Length: 386
View 1: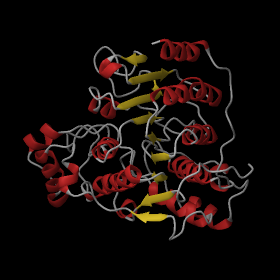
View 2: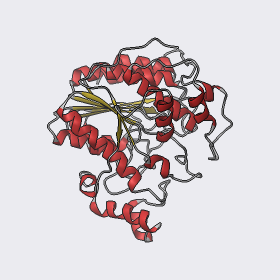
View 3: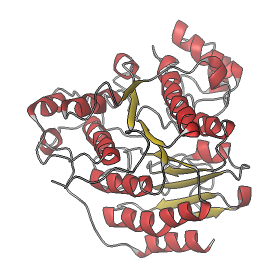
View 4: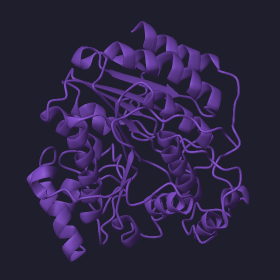
């Protein structure tokens, strides 16, 4: 389908960080995240010949001391106890939002996110020492708070990873969030730290919201920390052309202006047209291109996953991101082994639907270009003139 593109130059090939914990644990079939995501992307990349013992890293698990780099000790203990006992005292559960608000108690609720954090911390330590690209699709839990779960996120991997970069001598980090939901936990964690620029492109009016609107819905540059938080809340129907426009006209210039040592990209796939949790209309090829453009702006890059609630869309999208980071050619037709993996998926959630045939046979979506609407141009204008 596409010609082989050169991957960003680094001192070693990109590395894919994952773990079998994503296969052996689950939020449960009734939960939007009770679907194969990281494991499916990992299996697809192996079936396509893109993943092997040379570029795969078995993710370590962050210990309590590492998690305490951001999270309160009592909260960490509560997550561990909930996993061990399958329950929590009501007052503890309510205090830490565990077992409520979409944050279920399940077997693996401690070791799964702790592993995601371990992968991000591993990448951060290596990037603090040398150029490179790390891809950790299990990471990207951008809603987690220091003392409570939020938005299906127990531990906040981006915050911990960025703090690790700073602790190891990195002076400036640029965080780009392509998830359909505002990266509120990351923005708030670094609200008073001018070393971290947080930029979020997300659907306007979508959770997380507070009374009077979501924290990212005002748009423009937030003046805290000298103006290093930029939000671009986009309208429903956000298309491929509009993402390309914002990436080229705002994201890349802001990166150049900030001159970061490391870029972190949160590549949630819930902004795709096939995702049930947003009303945005991106194709996966648009997200691949955006990630590729950002990757070309740095020699030190950490890319994570994030949201994504259609297993076929997530697996295909995140596999394509790995191809983008390496310059691998995406085939027009999936080989039989990769196709079989997608045909084995069973999407049981109430929002699940009968899969389209092209979800089984291709990796790339059909592009969804369109007009760059006035509302999107206005968002860019606010960002550039703030």
